[in-house]
Image (cartoon, rainbow, N blue to C red):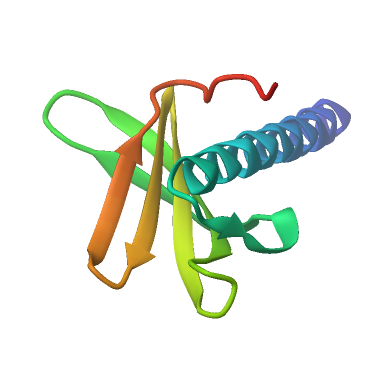
Length: 114
């Protein structure tokens, strides 16, 4: 019985890790797309996991995974941004600009790169 529990635990960890890696790729693509749309430069072309939270309201509950990244407006000033992936199927990018916060909701998946 203990072997079954250990097997399920290890399998669950592997699946969770795989989902986080897939989410990271989606986040990188979404951050690059939004930065490109606004004439910004995604620095280092990377995103990193910043938090995993549980969000619920009257209608539903979901897991929110936040990936942080940095971008530059004109190559000189570093700014931060966050890609939030909600399971199931929401994706938003938040950019901290000098004029204020810019939030773009991209839906389930950003469009494929050309």
